[in-house]
Image 1: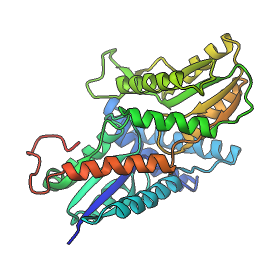
Image 2 (image 1 turned 45 degrees about the vertical axis):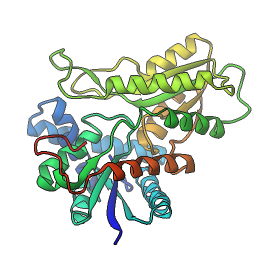
Image 3 (image 1 turned 120 degrees about the vertical axis):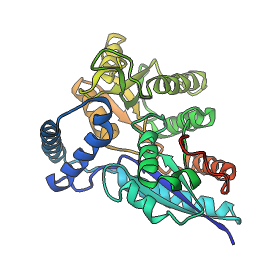
Image 4 (image 1 turned 180 degrees about the horizontal axis):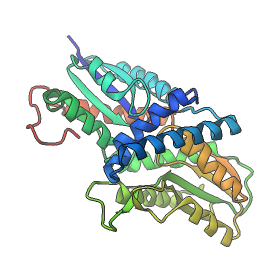
Length: 337
């Protein structure tokens, strides 16, 4: 009988109906799983921040007529992956589910639903590993499922450190961007910013993914520069930072835009390399920031459910499934990822 393998595509998730009723629980979970890891905020302040963040996002999205595609894209990724995995395998049956940290269906709920499967492979849909990405899946798995986590749950990481993925990204950008670009055009590679110093001015004790983000950017930048199709006059990293918790990474989108202007570049291609699926940070906030700075922006969507990406990810999942020793649990106390 084929083994049943659950594959959980784990990502932040965004509300699909931007009402306060949906936005407030979303903001509260962000504070619980992310902000609380880097800043000790009293409960009244948490409530205030969650309320203000929800009202601000509701107003901003309504003003621009924006609706997040993130969950819709993740569901499409899950369907495509399940189809590819099961076409390739006779010995295993894969069930691919979307699972979110901050909106239903919550990651822990989906984990509960698949607890009787032979194995559970969690795939963080953010390429750079950190305590704020794959770390959330590890935290929930270990704290909510204890022995089950050590017996048959694995969380994938190091997805960013792949030359094949870098080439998939390069091909994707060249295929998706307009053909009639000016002679002088820039490429902004955008990602979620992260901390470099905590509130005390110290290097954070947790892995924030800073070095991995820089490493992934350099890998991509080199791949673009080596490619015969490259016509970008300048390639820059554009991190989108938050405000709380300490000092955030200096390689910001705002800085990149200033440098583009200084180089005489006023038209850019923007590709959110730090995400595997379109979301409000990628296809709204970053784009709007560049437009407000006076740039003409050509947005290239995330890899989403593109065939080369899905095939690459399916291969990585198969490799993880092969290496997963069903009868040899990880010793208690060690990481599941």
